[in-house]
Length: 440
Image 1 (tube, one colour):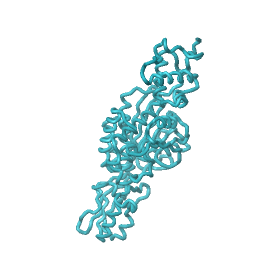
Image 2 (spheres, helix red, strand yellow):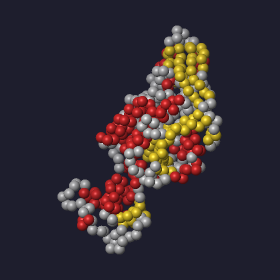
Image 3 (tube, rainbow, N blue to C red):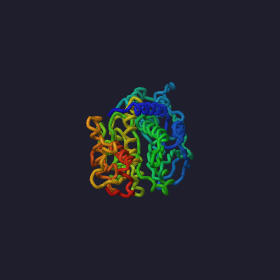
Image 4 (tube, rainbow, N blue to C red):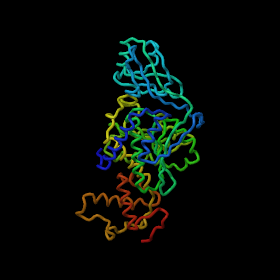
């Protein structure tokens, strides 16, 4: 799938933004989230929200806030063998503070590795059960075993009452109905999961500010699970405005793309992505909804059942770099970010532009030639496609079929059908479905 030059330029901007975000140690709470939102707010005026520890959100409760400044495992000479400053994946995310000296046998119970990927550091968390630990490559563990210990063990962290932080940006359109776009901010230094999603939605929001749109848009930057639950709990009275939604994550890797349907299965967002992917050159995958994954499972829980899908490139937990130190800046690219951006934009444009029209001259075909909108013989090579698109719009604009319905029936890209509809509407041949038909 090739990218237009404009999209590739945006892809390069997304990559640069992801690279700025990559070094930050983030979690579900803490200063890393705030620092990330501050950087994103340089491009888009995100509104930051703080919810205090202990606040009930549905069946959950806002946890203590976690922050960390340093962590290491050192030998008896003070040489750091495992160093948080070298890679923040080295610490079990949400580790409680500790400063002690331990034999290897005892330290070993707090070490996480990937024996089947001996050069990689795994990403592990302990959000809701207080614990401490270190993540390292299998080869680094072998080095600890070679040294033998004892080892100085330090995690300079805090876990205390504070706040959960999330951000949102609302772009008002012509109507109050909303399109919701969400991505998670809780992962530390992993480029695809999810610096890529943060960068893409920030650039999307920035570009959205330059466009006139029909729907209103709400962009969420939230910690995984607890952030979605918090937003749902605090916005429950406004959820009927959401007509389509998308969770975005892992959009910079070379796989995919992959779309996971909403719980409804045939919502506008599902149909839009299926249509876009059908007409793209990419080898895509479309999955039915299942109640595991990212925050789509919160938005699609039965008490809310919002029309929210998930877009990624490689499906989560299926590629070897997933949740490891191999998910670095070499794993993502500007081109793949640009492809993801274009796919999402095209699907969202369908939802925003889809409408039902009425043929004002329904008895036979109106004479397009005398209106100057029918392609002439010897004209542009794509004239026949434009003519066919107009004929499809005229034939199915009966007040019952939307433009997306017509595009699917015609097996033509939505953009071609929409352009034909604009042309016909400008010639007063079709109108919004509440307009009366004309006698011929």
